[in-house]
Image (tube, rainbow, N blue to C red):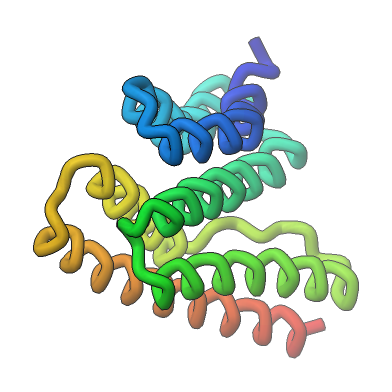
Amino acid sequence: MRWFPNALSLSRVVLAPLIGWMILERHPWAWTIFFWVSWTDALDGWLARRMGVESRLGALLDPLGDKVWVIVATLAWWRMGRIPDWLMGMVVVRDVVILLGSAYVNRVTGVRDFAPSTWGKLSTAIQLTMLAGCFTLGDDWLGWLWVAAAAGTLWSGLDYMLRGVRMLRSA
């Protein structure tokens, strides 16, 4: 069972194309798969800590799984006209900058520990709420979630950039 938390993280990467396809096809099971994948985000880390099986692989798979499936779901909802261009751009650019920035910091400093920040976790929770809202909410309510997601995305992106700069300066 030591592998189970990592399998949950990996399932987000593997199921991302399926979620994207299901959203685009308006598949009746899209919400169920989306809900499952959303819960694996919280469950994998909790299980790893509870079971005492935290690993370097898990520390890489968890954020990778988050980024891949959030980007895929965001792109699918954008393609369906449920997310505006500017917000889709913010979400994708933030995640690409985080991935490239962490790779650069790792290359320059050798640091491999990129624990998610509180702001990053909050941003992901807001983004997941917005993506879930795309299934059922009208544009008025969804508009409020766009604003919240934009604020969380921007703030957490700035927080991660500042963390990266501090790591580079301390090296």
